[in-house]
Image (cartoon, rainbow, N blue to C red; front, top):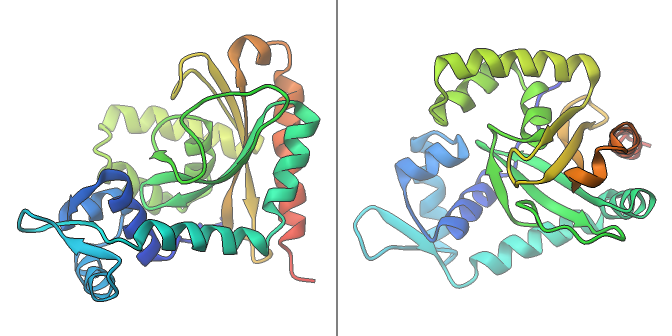
Amino acid sequence: MPTQTPVPRLLAIQLAIARAGSLSVREISALTGIPQSAVYRKLDALVDAGLVNRGPRRGQFCCGAESLRFAESYRREALANSPITTHLRRAAESSGELAAYLIPSGTEALCVESAEGRHILRCSYSPGRAQPLTRGASALAILAFLQPADARDILAALHVQSSGKQALFRQLEQVRAHRYAMSDSELDEGVWGASAPVFSGSGNLTGVVTIMAPSVRAEQRQDELISQAQLTAADLTSALEPT
């Protein structure tokens, strides 16, 4: 089964601290899925580079002055040499709805790019924002194509109860069978979404394409919007294959 291509650990740690403002090593490890011993090593490098500062409280770390600028530069450089932005814009233009590309980052789904359609939609996902891998179509589509052991580790780090895990694993089986995930009002009230996986040429999961729309508008267009997510994901998978 395909496995995820991880976000570089230095970037994952920077983004976690940037979003929270201040975190301990234990909290960083829980949010990113990176072992605490590795977090300590990466933090030393980030502090030496001035990208992370030691917080006013012992054991806490906060953003350095260049941290957010560095993370944004990384995102822009990565996208500049990829077909992601072009394909998202095509999907947004074709569907008239919001199209986004999300990647697994530790225990979260991180949005790295999005494109607005004719209809403006405000939701939990915009570039640089992330949500835990527990709810929503994007999270389901990512979890479904991880190795089962990796998915279990993420759910354990997020303290998902055993009863909840069993129901979630049944959902993931359906996602794998249909090659897409769908949700309604799980992250934002009144927002519907459909997500499909994107794979690299080596068969590893690189991220997911998600099409989002107001529930009332998506109700009559679900099949069309699901197909749009799947088509865009398939096009990106083909574009990422070695030439």
